[in-house]
Amino acid sequence: MKTGFSDYTLFLGASDGKQTDLVQQAVILAAGKGLRLQVVQKENPKCLIDLGPAFLIEYQIWVLRLLGVKEICVVVGYKGDRVRDVVRPWGCHCITNDRYEQTNSLYSLWLTRQWVRDTFLLCNGDVLAHPWIYKSLADGPSSCFTYDSSSGADPEHMKVTLRQGRLRAVGKDLPLSQVSGENVGILKFTQTALEPLFDGTRQILQTIGDDAWAPQALGAMAQQEPIIGIDVAGIPWIEIDFPTDLEYALNRVWPEIKKCFVPNVGGKEHGNLSSINRDLPDSSKRFVNL
Image 1 (cartoon, rainbow, N blue to C red):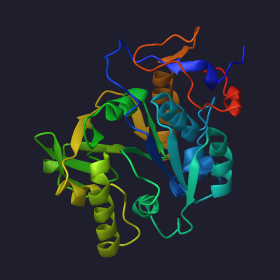
Image 2 (image 1 turned 60 degrees about the vertical axis):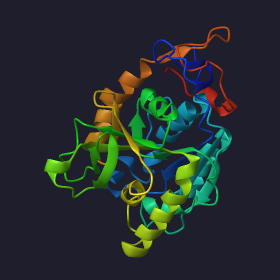
Image 3 (image 1 turned 45 degrees about the vertical axis):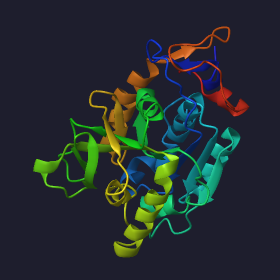
């Protein structure tokens, strides 16, 4: 029987008693064209990768809603109208990066500076990640980011250096001897971190240019504000850049994620995510056979 996303919640194990409603806002960066995936995606943007029951960005929004995030901003660019049509039923706000072909994710983040006003989660629109990764950030007491200590050797990886659990450097060209792991692409910034975050963003855009990546602002920000690293090695996730990434996402990561989907039963809670469906649209009923 076809039931849909609106009939599911997430089970992540025994409740740890922590609140999951402390993060009220989230930003999803989804303006990119995804040139390296066009051989399989054709004209579809990466955030509209078809997972079967849902597009990638809809899965991200669903997890954020279940975590209690009330306001979600999606930065669109390539095929922006198509992305808007998908996220509109979920009640998302959209900001357009008209310069998506000349800029990268840092410029898209910069465009949200007047919308963000509180603690928020920042998500790359091409990352498929287990819900535990989102929850670990939402439960974190300070600004934090997720990284994978089992990865980071590839030239394409956005590498990070940590000392005593805090971020010290980020970049694709860090010496391997200094690499602590790969940045996952899902982060949390507290309200007190907003000023140093966007100050750092402005500085990077002025010095490096509009083609800088969003994680590059973290290096500047880390000099003013402590950013805690959460190691998610062993937890299913992938940044989908290449056709091989997409194959791995569909055949390895997504099946593992679906194991924590459970049906809502009589409004009961499952584990440490409530079964209430916060603002899930009627259109979500088309996502079937999870």
